[in-house]
Length: 356
Length: 260
Image (cartoon, rainbow over all chains, first blue to last red; front, top):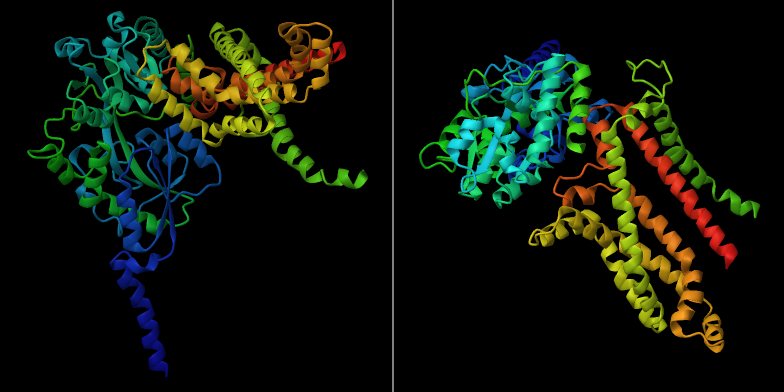
């Protein structure tokens, strides 16, 4: 009897170790729910359906439009299992203790990451985050209206060119607006110098007066694919889609430097189903899911093999300038989280630029 | 009577929780400075001063009021003849026409606006004209229904008496029908002007990003800048304008009723 008890105890101690070694048991999640909060138009829903089927779970999938909105949502009691903020917001979330470390015994496929998204400054060892998509900010323009040489020569200054008045879309995002102003003035996109930011503000006011742009968000994608205006500030992932829809369009990454941005999957500290969240993150980084997502939305995959297959010979984005972001250019910067004062002052100044 | 009054308790609780309490919070936010979460109220009128001292914000306020005003005027100009026409139909046809009129209201407003976007894209119109088309389309049914109700309940004998006394149709309309339908116009204005001032989705979608309205400003300060104090101040200014215009229309209503 005693022996049996010892044996049972020994078994009880060994068994969890066995399942831990494998990370998880695919059957253990049956019937549970995973709450995923992602950017709008940022996934191939069939990937989500396939995940639900494979693990017999339900994915409650919701979307948001900006990092700032996500931040405010996280202040309330709602618990999400997986969210996909951008670099600087991840930095802020880590500092605020709002994230939990990944379980690397489950997320064991970080080797899949493309070179451009390894060792990123906001989370160098991927303790908290796994890149999902990455991008630069650039200009999509109509080559039948603007000469490519002119565009490359002007870079961001095209946004002050009165010749294009009424023919431009400007993305309604204070951070990106200040970035292009600061880059064209030769400052850092992360400057907190009062004089530099006010100079950038004046630059944007000049843009508003000279260019008279339409301020838009995601509707810029379809509008430029239809060729409604000559130029637009867009994210490279959206640009890749626009270029694949309209062959007159080209993508310019200005020489003055731009923002390199990464959206990465993280697990909030108050997640209700963190284990399944880890499984989901691993799943999304695998080849099949990454490829399907990248094909569907046009953003640059964080998976090295997918990136190579899609941009290489015969790939769907072969020859598409916007799909493969410029990597390793010294004037390109990632955003860092601005001090609280500028977090509210930049949007304030930007609102005034647009309303003037 | 007393027992009936009791039935309103759930509604009173509802009002207290979802209307009065948020209004008090807006008032508190609008008259304080942001602090680091600790409850230390330092009352200030800075937020209001900031709004009224900046010509940009005043311009936004004016644009919002102007768009709402023009929308209301067009709704009356188009809605009145339509209501009059419907009111003169046989009763069964009237019900049918009102049903047709309310039919588009069953469809989500965003959906309708996107449809208009698709339609208007093919026309080379000023973006302001597009905004007015969308706004008038969306708010017109409210105006027509209000005016129609006022005209339909008008006592026919008054019209007969007017004809009897030798007035022609035009004079009868000017002296009898129009004055007696003013309450309908006024409640129509309330239903059109007030939501139109704070509407920002239609101008945003149809204006092609050329309009910043007061609703957009509030959205920016709450959701992007995270400046709830200033956002609340703008909301409060909006609320005051709405209350003032309701008071004015009420007053107009009473004076016409007294005249009648």
